[in-house]
Amino acid sequence: MLFLPSFYFSLSLNNDGDTEYSIQQKTISRLKEQLAELEAKGLKLNQEIQNKHQALFKGREERDKLRLEERNIWVVYESKVRRKNQILASRSNKLKRFGDQVPELLGSIAEGYATGRFLKRPLGPIGACISLKDPLLAVAVECCLRRLMKAFCCDNYKDEAALQELMRRHYPKGNRPQIIVGTFSEKVYNVQGRKADHPDYPSVLDVITAPSPVIINCLIDMRGIESILIIKEKDKARRVMQQGRPPKNCREAFTAEGDQVFSNRYYTSDISMAQYLGGDLETQLRCEKKE
Image 1 (tube, rainbow, N blue to C red):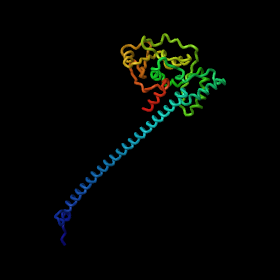
Image 2: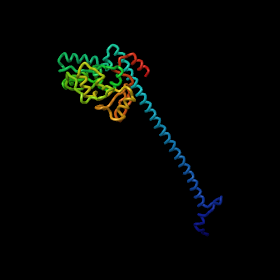
Image 3: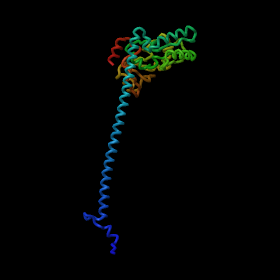
Image 4: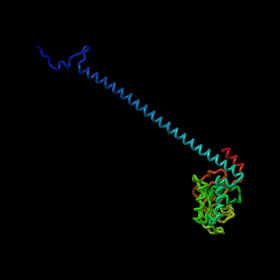
């Protein structure tokens, strides 16, 4: 019997003349090509998935942005509706400019004072207790006083607690007016040594009047109205406050449009029309409709 060496079989030829080794190499090469194709397809699919994820994420961002814009628009709309209703209601009762609950709250305060609930009758809203010597300065004064326009004054903390109790009844959902506690005085403070001094421009203290010195003293304590000038024109306000040293005892100023001016800063007002001190209700209604 004839025995052939083992390498004879490994080098045996197929019908195409290829050895078993070359066949294996071709198979490996073909598999590598297939693997490369699959990897390329996998990368392409991964990229497509990533792109779709990014598009989905962007779509969600746009959706959330639109929802937020919708909520903001709705909040502004509701605010304007409330404001319009307040203006309409103030035709018959000017106190409603300060909130629908204010007339009823003042009625409760009067009743409480009559029955001995308060040691001294609380005063407010502050904006309802002041008037302007020049109606054209309404926006300037409102921008200066801001939240103080709706605030109330109490002589002592016992009265404050009683007023808080009344406010909880009339403002069950919060957003109650601020209460400022300070001993009531029958005389306006002497501010001669610390009042803003300028020959051409008045202070906020100079342009408002109030039947009670308590209101004026409260605004001096809380806002320093004696040291705030009213300078109607913007360019003059900048020149007075920012070109050189500000006037003596003056720490800030307001323009007729409500812009706030410091020695090194200038803030443009976000209020275009007086809400509380303005007297022309029809003009306010027309402006609300335009907006």
